[in-house]
Amino acid sequence: MKVDIALKKVVDESYSITIDTIPELTFNKKVAIVTNPKVAGLHLAYLLSKISATDLYIITVPDGEEYKNQQSVDLILESLFNHRFNRKSLLIAFGGGVIGDMTGYVASIYQRGIDFIQIPTTLLSQVDASVGGKTGMNNRFGKNLVGAFHQPQSVYIDPYFLSTLPKREFGAGVAEIVKMAVTFNKEFFEFLEQHDLHNKEVLKEAIKQAVQTKADVVAQDEKEHGLRAALNYGHTFGHVIEKQTAYKKYLHGEAVAIGMAMANKLALKMGLMTQEEVARVEKVLHKYDLETTYSIEDVEEFYETFFLDKKSSDDSITFIIPQGIGGVKITNECDKELVLDVLKEF
Image (tube, rainbow, N blue to C red; front, side):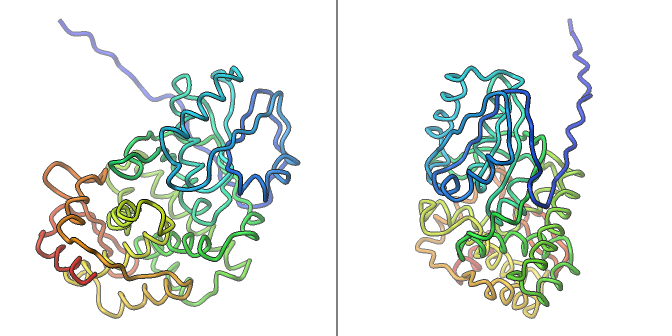
């Protein structure tokens, strides 16, 4: 006997991304703003001046990648249960990528799914983490290995928040911008070569182009079955670096910048990039004080950690390799010895 369940997706999960001053937001429901002490101290009063809700709560979790874990998720969930949130309630992620990822993940699992809004406050989260619906947390095996695809209801990118961004956080965001330009948009990369992102109008244009690039990719491949994996250029290497340094030495974007340098070296050995193109990418990264060097203590251990990457399988590792500038190759057929040769250079 057999019973067929014919499920058809009838919900339109499209949403808008606003790149401008946050408008007045009114909600006839319970709302919780999830943030951390640093962001709250700098910008919570500004956000509260824009929001009105039936009931409004503030949930604060510790600041830092090392707190993107089950304990923080449980803290958020416990607050929602204590305040009797229901399926019509709303979460607002107010912070960087760590806050956005965890808040989105909680929204995906609380009572099997409630709405959430992204209000990213770092450059990295504005151009990357807040867009696309990837949510999750870290565990002892690696980064973002527990999570769900859960699209936000909307995203509000307000450049105002970047006025207090530390230099390193700014550079970390630039790394994600460069990532998208190298893999998908040669003209955008040339724009980055020719302009200074410290200029407010230039930065606003770069944010728009980066968000549009990612939005176009996500629209074609929401659940990362193919093309969207290319957005992980630099991440396969970078996630290993983050894990080896216990998420404390490098910001995510800083690790990605080093990871891009590693991927570029692999592309060079595979004949997919020229030495000139490798140098051009590094020059843009160095302009924002991003490192492209790293000291690997155990090459074999570094290589084995690749297998914890979500894109890898039992016996193969998926690498995202740039093809020149503006192109990308997703492959699980990189010769191990070739990869080891690259790692030995670091």
